[in-house]
Length: 325
Ligand code: ZN
Image (cartoon, rainbow, N blue to C red):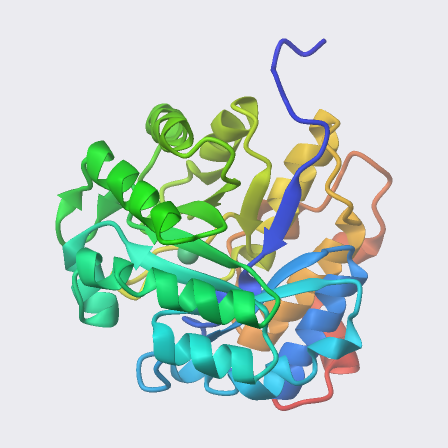
């Protein structure tokens, strides 16, 4: 009908509590739990809750175990946590997390800066992390960071990213995800890498993790949707940024992706109004204006209430927050 080949539904994974908050001014554990409650209430069923990484590298997520201990409050939500090595994977599993995401940078420059080891050395840990996850009754997804470009090494050769994906699967990875860490990939390169990685790893679920740094995030998602990719990451309000690029914006905003899907007849299982409420709340919690266009403009396809007015956010935040965000 539309001339586009689009899926009937997507599996939206919310990554704001991890990818978003890791770069924002730290907020309290109570505030994080309130954010999780808002996200679950908005219908999100896959949430990357936190990360078990070096507290020195990511001081905003030092309370990972405390957050993990509360996740039983939302039994209908599938929570995961990001890890950057075997040690973190062990801590995550000990904290009760079953589904792990292990990030491997396809580019050595980013890998060295991020986890102080080469891509090859990072790949060698996949098997042990997979075993930890499986022993806990869970799964391990390998997220390939800098899949398209690296802030240090420049463009990542496509063959290199494909080889990393193949090696990860050989080492037992249950799922793959391609990360556009610095937000440089536009639809053409998204489609060509997605196709190449999928051809190399038939039958392995493949997700997409786009950053909207240069405004092309949703365009890349649309290209992937047309290729049948349905596992899409997004962060509420477009939270986040990049530690290697000051001023860079974060992931594509969850409510923008939900809007794109709603207006295109693609099911996400979310309530757009509640997503906007959650985005407005977290904007107050982190204390800065978030980049989401939907947060700014609202969903004007329907009659909107005054709640869509931007200035309402702080009043609402003051009223509902309990912690010291
Ligand atoms: Zn990211």
